[in-house]
Every structure is written in structure tokens, then in C-alpha cells.
Amino acid sequence: MEIKRIPLGLIKSNCYFVSGATGALVIDPGFSSQQVVDLLKSAMDKERLILLTHGHFDHIGGTEELRRQTNTDIAIGKDDAVMLARNDYNLSTRFHAKYQPFSADRLLCDGEAFSVGDLLVQVIQSAGHTIGGVCYLVNGVLFSGDTLFMESVGRTDAPLGDAQTLVQSVKKLYSLPDSTVVYPGHGHSTTIGHEKEYNPYVRSDR
Ligand SMILES: [Zn+2]
Image (cartoon, rainbow, N blue to C red; front, side, top):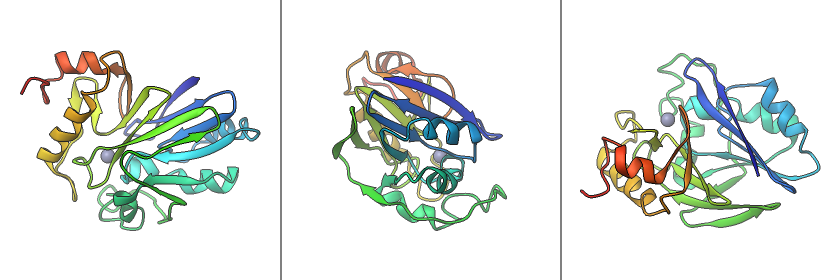
């Protein structure tokens, strides 16, 4: 499995292209990107899916165009689907971002697992940053969206955010093996073990 991190937009939101032998994923195409379109077009012979970790504009803004250009379905956690259509929830209004509402093809539930070619995707609900954000465990590697960053966590002051819920979600992620590599929605990768030891916002022992 190959993972390519593509920071997009002014906020440098991480988009990921994940490629296996027979499956390919794009996670969080937050802004239109020819590079991301070309990467997914290079995988047209594979099973494909676009996964969204949550419904903020900087993670979803390039999704509709990517679907149109590559004929690839879009999936999001079911409780965040409302954010795709509500510019006050997805913050595009607040940040004056160009955004056209769209809808997803698949709504995902906590604990759901499915295959995209040779990529096994497990859905882990991780609300708090938004009301229905999810993380994706793909062949044992975690894509944590804006729930967990290297030595930080997502903010909870936007509409539909909740600080206590976020802490519970991060603690749920801490139950994964320490060696689990984490690819967050912003910044560089980390591991669950590193975060349990060094993350100042959520301690594993409290
Ligand atoms: Zn966010």
C-alpha cells in the first residue's frame, strides 16, 4: 500500500491518495487539485472510493469535481452528511470559500468495515471536532482527520463541535496498537504510541 500526502489550499489541509494493488482511495480532497485528479485517473483500473473524514470546507471542497472527473463515489460518516449542504456548518461562509453543496453516495456508520479492492477500510466514529466525524483505519493505518494531530487535537469551537466528546473520541483511538501510524488532516504523521506519551491535550492515563 502506498500513501501520498498532498497538502491543499491556504490552510494546508492534508489530502491523501492511498493506492493498493487493486484498490485506491482519496481521503479529504479539500480543494480542487489537478494532481489529485491525475492520481485517481491513474487508478481507473482499480476499485475506487473518495472518503471524507468530516464536513468542513477545507476537507470537502474539491470532492464534487473529483467525482465528476473520475466517476468515483463519495462516502462520509452519516451524521456529518448534513454539513455538505449547510454552508454555515461546513464553515465555507465564515471563511468566504467558494463552495457548491453536493451530496454523498454512501453514508457510513461507526464500526462498519468494507473492502475497496485490496484495501480494508474500518470506520471509527470520532465526533467532537464535528458532530459525526469519522477516522478511517485502512489496512491498519489510521487517517484521523481533524480529530487527532501530532501532539495536538482538533478545535471544538465551531458549530456542532464538543470538547468532551472529542476527548472521548481521542481516547477511543488510543485503544489502537501503539505502533499504529496516524495520518492527520493537518501536519505530519505520528503514531498512537507517540500521542499517548506526548499529546498534551488528551492523556491516556486521565
Ligand atoms: Zn475540520
